[in-house]
Length: 226
Image 1 (cartoon, one colour):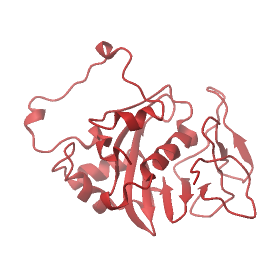
Image 2 (image 1 turned 120 degrees about the vertical axis):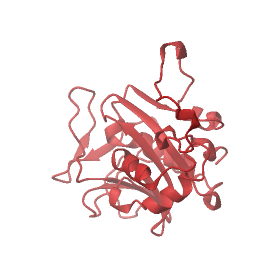
Image 3 (image 1 turned 90 degrees about the horizontal axis):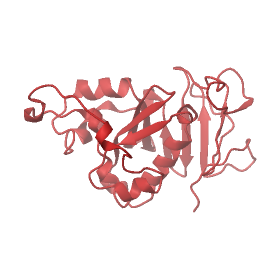
């Protein structure tokens, strides 16, 4: 089964992958194909709007809109109202990169990120979030799919949904950190830093000794082989 997304208008027969934007109202799906720029819909009408290179690219989304992608019984949505903070916290607090993280930290991190929730029949079964200015830079973090749903290609589909999002098309750099899933992400164009010696980080004193890790350091290692 092909899981790519193609930019077309609504057809009589709904395709496996669909995308919609709006305040919870279904609109004509937008599908995207790898290697093509996706189409998006204006927030105030249903006319398609082709993405344009920066700086002429219009603001396609705002806080009141969201994108949704469908594949059979599975849904990926950027609607923050769908997020189950308790479910996300329950998973992240058991991971090696965010072990013991407080619920309020997870909730705050979700609130200030572009989140892609993965759902099956309303149940949250996965997540990915992009920390971004939605203009030039993004950092992919806290990517996971529950163990019982791995091996179905959902991680790769989730990545395709992220890379097809209209507000991430002008990013000059999208980065991530992973301990064991390099092979997966290389399939989507990720490479090692070209000049790692030019990059620095700052952490507060004693950070490594704290039992609570920073949830923003999400490692997508769980997706290896999905």
